[in-house]
Length: 389
Length: 131
Image 1 (cartoon, each protein chain N blue to C red):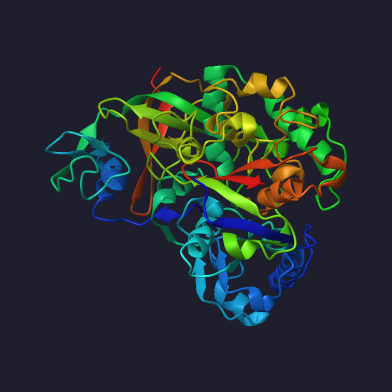
Image 2 (image 1 turned 30 degrees about the vertical axis):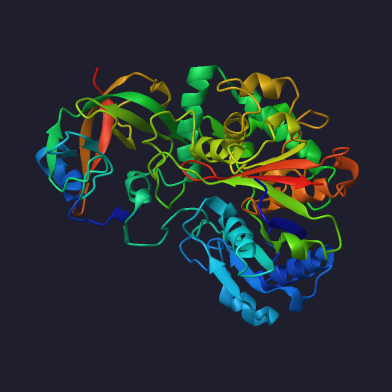
């Protein structure tokens, strides 16, 4: 049940750590590159969509909303949307797909911009939800005030339980981190280029057990733009449209990080299962994967959620070399967020698209035509399957 | 200084029960469903008859993590956070800091007992080993 929507262009700014460049400079650069990739002009863009919208609750997490981007780029739109409360960082892409499929727009500019690297200092640390507020409400009011301040804590207790039930060890997570670093060394845009050995990985300081420094993704400054077009409009673009074969956003448990009955699963499992109900394709048809790696432990969860291996089997699947360079199901071939930088899922999808267009140079997966992307960790998730015909 | 939760009609019993040494959990008076985080209506049967009841304050560690990173000025590290399956409230977990033991010695399945630390008008549950 293919959607009448396709990805037609992607663009990423020159991302980096402490770039000192304004978010809008990154965004404009990413937008120019995405339009060039798609063979479109700014007059063709008639929709705009982002996650989460302008937000000030965590420094540099989302400095730009749709309004100021419309102003800065001089866009006239028929559809606009910012989605702080949707199926993960993928929400704006899903909303865009539904907008073009229902005729609200023909070419939607979807963006994600972050300046977490420049905004992060010793006293104003990024990624603490609600930082600086006197009183907290909502789901994180049961975690942050209890000194479970960081998502690394929440992912840490998921990993502890998973290790306990299935015998995974830090070495398995180390294979993810070191494998993605090898990919990054073949991607000039990745922020972490120096070699990373298993010894480096195991010797790094602990953040929240069993997760150490190299299990955590890297805050950066940068922007990524992905253009979602109506199927008929996509035919006029510069390259083969990447049809959105299916997407899934189901959630079966509470909006919390500790109450899901089985914390060796997460929202990804609900979302991916729903995605597969809408396609005749199977996991064996997939050539390249972009799986959310805000923390390394999310990768085995996503592998199992998407059905590339069974529940509890990811450690062997990883150890057998399936997901690294040269593997049958290569994951995060641009280095992922662990080595490429945290573009909140958009960077992972950018890489999947680059692979499907055959433009990933030294890291190219030969003949890749079907890609799977999963974004989000914990209770939140979005899944998408892309196809180049 | 940690941020504090805002007190609401549904969560006040949970955050203030420690003043009298009680861990208060919301239950549906109609279908007996244990509700956490607390709600004004029962997510299972939509009854509005919600009552907060004291539970024994013991439970078993479902999972844990030892935090080593100082996320806020003045935060003392390392410390353990335990996600505990509560006795007497099926399906409910309370996540809290572990006190009274070496953080590296926490184990899955270990029996914990609640204690409280008071900051302003909030009594935070904490977990200590039940021996």
